[in-house]
Length: 79
Image 1: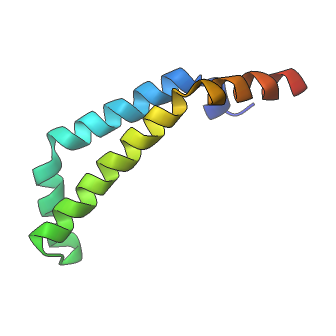
Image 2: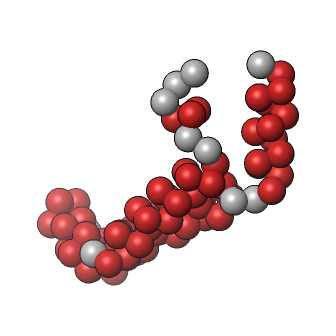
């Protein structure tokens, strides 16, 4: 069993939500870094940083869904 498989879905959701919160706290700095690194306009850099926050929050919410937890129990029962 890999290290990631040992982490519960609930804990994964917490990690993803924390990552989203850290990204949100630093969104302007990250957006500016993207502008410098990739030569994007301000709106493009900020948009990309905001999309990253949205993706992290989406998967954190998905990890909390009961169906996923039930699926995990089902998979473990097959082992």
